[in-house]
Each structure stands twice: as structure tokens, then as C-alpha cells.
Length: 232
Image (cartoon, rainbow, N blue to C red; front, side, top):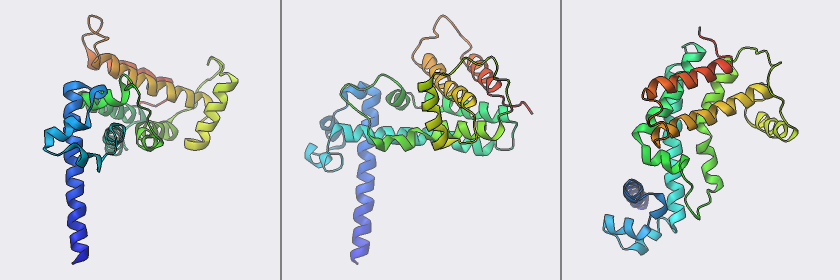
């Protein structure tokens, strides 16, 4: 009986935790992350604020939960797409995953803005967010490390000693078989992926590019070429 009671209590806590986070996401949409308020969340779901604090002791704890959820949802979308296209040509695998990231961002703009938009004043992301944040880059790196062809690196700009140290650390952690030049290009492609999406979502391409989808495919296709990802 005690186990059943504990299980019911756990389910109730999980459901209420989800309800709090759903209300907080509506606040992201309506007032933005900087104005997220535990008291306002409590009012919306009909709880006293002291009860909400038992689930999330501070606004930053709630923000962290929302950030981890957003990164995990985005990572899951990228990984599912990568798995669905695993037998495609390397370039098509790459483009499919990049398109999945863009589609998720367009469908979940406020959550995308939470993790890739303007930093929330006074908030510092804890270590808890790192694993979730790494899911998309790791999926992209998986495609590169499995499929990248040998490149002529003679015309690559030189990497400074501090950059080589950074890349050596990253190689050891994630891709020991990838050379520094290819790894640098993969990181550059990741920054360009987020940059291309952010320029579109935040209006920086207005009156510059009308065909957002075509431009995105061109940018990420050029990165695939730069990484040596074959068409067949």
C-alpha cells in the first residue's frame, strides 16, 4: 500500500511540475524570459506562491528546467531526423538534420529564443544545461566524423595556439579521429546554423532575403561542401 501511495504522490508531483512549466512557457510567449515570475505562474495555475517554491525554489531554477527541456526537445528532433536519414548520402543527412533544427525553432520560437536569444539578465546557466545543449552539435559531429572526406587543407587559415588547445580538448572529449581543421569547420558550421536561424527568426533578413528556405539550404549546403560531405 505504501508503494502505491508513493507512486500516486510521485505522479501527482510530476503532473504539477509539468503544469508549472507549461504556465511558465506561456509567460515566455507573453512577457519574455526576463520577466518570468514565479508569483505570476502561481496565480495562473491557482496555487499560492509558497507552494510553487517547493517545486522550483527560485526563478532561476525554473528557467534552468525550461532551458534543459528546450535543449532536450531540440536534440531529440535532430537525433530522430538523423536516425531516419541514416542511409542517405552524407550531404542529405546533414541537410535533413539542419532543416529539422530550423523547423523546431520556427515551431517553438519562444523556447528557441530562451536558449539562443538575448541572455536573461542576472541568470547564469549551471552545469545541468551542458549535456542537453550538446545534443545537436554531437548529432552534427556524428555525421561529420562518419562521412567527412579527406580535404586539401593547404589553404586553410592557420589556427592560433590557444585555438589549437581548445580544439585538442574538444577532440579528446568528442571526436578523437577528426583532425583539428575539420573540427574547426564543424564548430563554424554549428555557429552558422544557429546564426542563419536567428537572422531569420529575429528579422535580420527582412528586406534582404525573401526566400528564407532557399537561403538556409544554400548556407548549410555550402557548409556541407566545406566539410567534405559527399553528395552520394
